[in-house]
Image 1: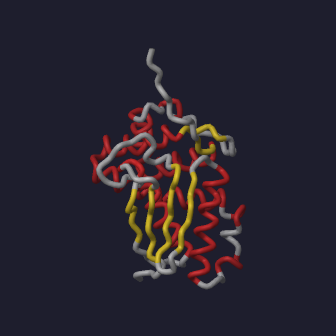
Image 2: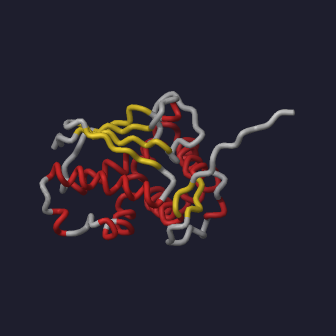
Image 3: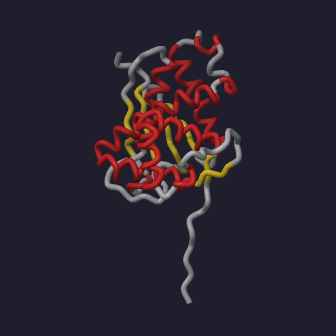
Length: 211
């Protein structure tokens, strides 16, 4: 007799799932969003986005399926671009939902020195995921670089790829850094990915802006 071991069930909150779907609709339009949901076997969300609450009811597999659907619909390069743009839009939607809760929209935060804003902002963003989802983020600061380690990642959940594929997270952090810094651009790159066999999905951020 053989037995199969299922993957653990992990979830995003309904509010986080709703943010992703709203951002997706903003970037690819309603028809594109519906096509993505159909391809990702998530047609139940068409005209029926999750409610704005913190119940953990959006499976990681659903988030990963959306990223796979982007690549199927738009090709690998186009899907990467869409995921980056959706990630950026997710930050703007998320800021409205979570920013006041964590003090990120307070004038006092905006008046802090840049490097302090980066450190405080990154810690707050990590806390949002760690507190309101089953995603686990660990920060590492070596002085010059900030390492955003996703130790349990919904974006590449149950995927196997040859290159890092958590483009939505990269887009989210790009927009977060732009906003936190007041319009500066930073180098950042996903250097490790669980889908590639690594222990974490790691995005490395140069704390010194390039412009």
